[in-house]
Length: 255
Image (cartoon, rainbow, N blue to C red; front, side):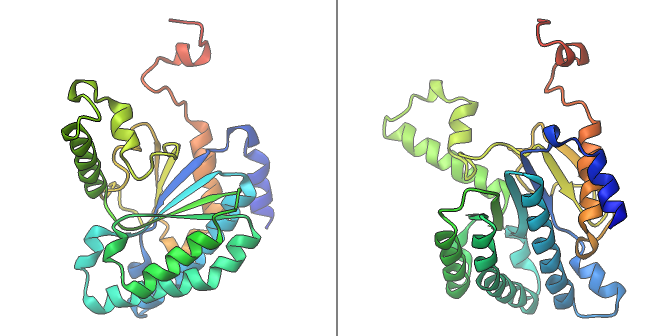
């Protein structure tokens, strides 16, 4: 507890990232290291989701995006997919009352039509129950991949162009952004990946163009508030230039 308090004192409350995205990796390895079933690792990972969601809310973070199940994850063994689907539906049902009590609003991104009907219903019920909440926005990426999202955006833009609603010559970065699932959400300031891997894995490829990337060897079930603060402190130690020079960042009047 003292360690957490010391790190909180080091954290600059005026430079808290507005949007944190997390690739939650390492559940299976966590279970394997303990000679347990992979499902136990996923169940333990849910505890980390709850912990990090609550802490993000306490810190004043506005958006937390979690990569919960990728499009590619459908290729895993069917038994594991079934377990994950059950766990997702059960967790949303169980946690929705607490999310409402903590003013957390749920958003779902991804090909939700591919999810089992009962899971989809649990998710939609959670979205509806938290629609009035004004605190942390919790974005759950389920059956999601960035290539799917970008392909979908291209189709939306093409359909509008074919209908004469937009001129192809006028298509801009803003046009693409508006066609994405995250069109009303600011880009992540910080992307965290747990589990030691250093890749993006088809996650928010458009949105993280200027995000700060943070990789940690800590497996997701072990990613606690102290580890989260380490990531936030590292984020605050960096200079975000967005293509500008350090002098321009320090003195915006410089052209």
